[in-house]
Length: 214
Ligand code: PRT
Ligand code: MG
Image (cartoon, rainbow, N blue to C red):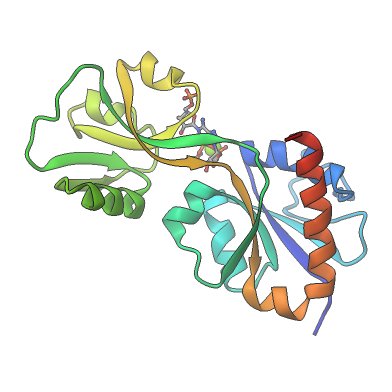
């Protein structure tokens, strides 16, 4: 079996925070990721490669072993499920909250609440746990529009400062989960490539600890 290690990164805002953390842990892309259209990169470490993926695809690549390790938002992991994955480290970047939100001051009108979200599984589970009847509607973006357009009574979305909600006449309501970016490892790779993976986890752990003195 090859001892090559492939680490899958989530593009977008998580990538911007991941690269400095990897650098602190001694891992750098061999070339500038912004300067090329390549998605698979060699690094300064022999046999360690980086692949940059759509965030929602990272758990799939790691679960199926196409990548050995991955960097993904807890929101994405909650929605995707974590079968076949270890989650050894909280990277403590891209922190935010997964919340319900609705039009400021508005009472939920229907007995069966309409909820628009891209986090369909998480939303179904959460409303069921609360004993609230909900019809969950899948959207792919701009969740804030749904209540304004009368598509939904509430949304489930990521909130950081709350500015996006406020700008659209909405308010955060219930906290579903606090979110940050996690390191995930394929369970089989964790066993088979233990001696390559553990030092990388340990260096990342030190890099995280050095940033957030406790
Ligand atoms: O394009 P896509 O639909 O994939 O998402 P995106 O462009 O909003 O974000 P992306 O892909 O760059 O990164 C998404 C990941 O970053 C999420 O899975 C989270 O783990 C993490 N993260 C951290 C966030 C935020 N903070 C965040 N604020 N993801 C999204 N947001 C968005 C949120 O959806 C809302 O539109 O920012 C807005 C809310 O921010 P505030 O500050 O106005 O409350
Ligand atoms: Mg995006």
